[in-house]
Image 1: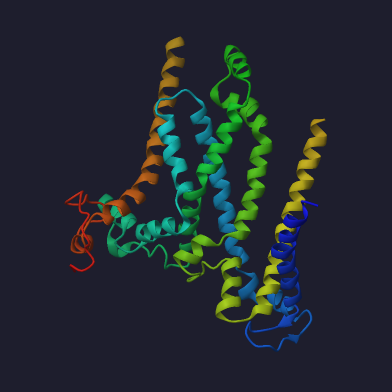
Image 2: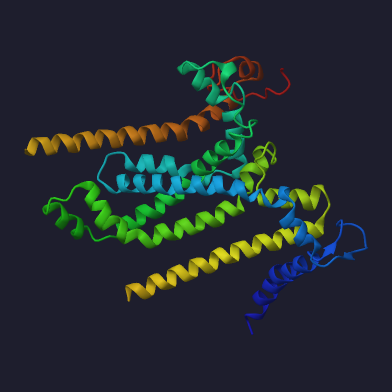
Length: 280
Length: 67
C-alpha cells in the first residue's frame, strides 16, 4: 500500500517516457506539429544504414581504450597508496579532487588548458617546442578525441583509485606478512595475492567502463559541441532531436543506445554469475 | 646481500614518489592556472603568461568595467 506512491512515480517518470520514446521511434515527427506520420521501421533503417549516425560509436572506442589505461594506472596508484609511504593522504586527496568538481567547471579548465597559447602550449613552449608547430588540441580531428579522453581519465581516475584502495585494504595483512617472510617480491605479491583478491572489482570497473564509453556526453558536448569528429552517440542524439528537430529518428537512436546498454548489462550479469558459481 | 635488497627497495620508493609527484603536478597545474587567471585583471590576463603568478593575490575588485 505504501509502495504505491513510489511505484506511481517510477511508472510516471521512467516507464511512461520510455514507452513514449519507443512509440515515437516509429513515427516521423518534428517535435512541434500535431501531425505525426507513422513510418514503421524506417528510422531504425536510417540509424543503421547512414554512416554519420552509427559510425560515431567508433569514438567510443577511444574512450574505452582510455578507460583501460585509466584502470591500469588506478591499480598501480592503489598499490602504491596501500604501502606505508609518507603524504599518501595528500596525494590521494589531490587525485580524488576532480571527482568533486562540477563537469562544466572541468570543461572550462580544460578549454583553457588546450586552447592555442593556453596552459599546455605555454608549458611545451617553455620546454622548447615552437608555438607554430604545435597542433590545435581541440581542432585537429586526429587529436581531438585523445585530448578529450585525457580529460575523462583525469576526471574519473580518482573513483577507481578509491575503490581499488578500499579493496586492497580489505585483504588480510597476514597474507602479505607471510609472503614477505617467504621472500616474495613486490611484483610477486601483486600477481599472486593482490590481483586475484580484487579481481571482481577490477572486472566490475571494466564493464562500467564499457557502459561509460558508450554513454560519454558531458565533456565532448560542452568542450567542442561535437565538432571536428568528437561527436559521440549521445551528443549526436541530442543534436538530432533538438537542433535538427527529428524527434522520431532521435528516439530510435535512444532505443538503440538502450539496447546496447542492456546487452552490456546482461553480459556483466552472466560473467558475474559464472564467477560466483566457480568460487562455490 | 642484505644491503643490495635494501638499496633496491629505496630505489623503488624513490620511483614511487617521483610518479606520485608527477601525477599530482598534472592534477594541480590546470586547476591552479585557472585559479591564478581568476585573480588577474583583464589586461594582465590577456598579456601575461598563463603560468605566471598574478601580480596581486588579493585582487578582489570588479574588473569587468575596467577593460
